[in-house]
Image 1 (cartoon, rainbow, N blue to C red):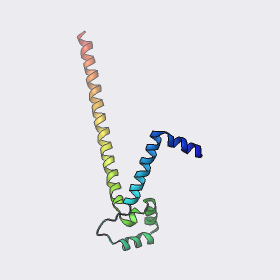
Image 2 (cartoon, rainbow, N blue to C red):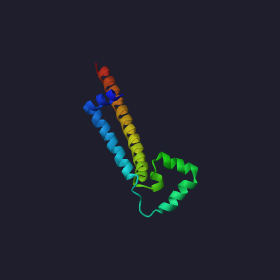
Image 3 (tube, helix red, strand yellow):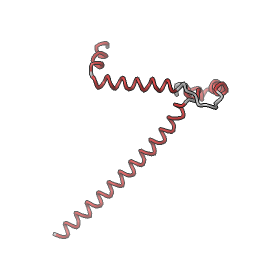
Image 4 (cartoon, rainbow, N blue to C red):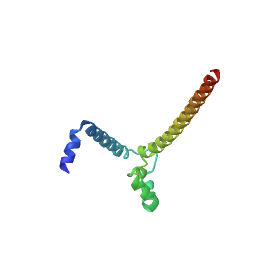
Length: 115
């Protein structure tokens, strides 16, 4: 097992990928402790401690819901935007493909008729 880790560390692209992911995890964990201003933290902690479902959601979020942190606010908005952009990309791709296919079939028919 130690030999495998040494091999992974020697490969530059794998090492850079691992360091990048670890760096993102560190940044995420640090940002999970930055609370949003104007929120009563003690009341929020009591709410999550008294409700098992919310406590489970808080556990899966890494504690960012209990702190009502910046990370908890940003991930939802980011997921929404990714979904919207993904839908737009698919719609535009579909439109471009249909226009290309229509034009190529139409032009081919015109070329065949002219000969």
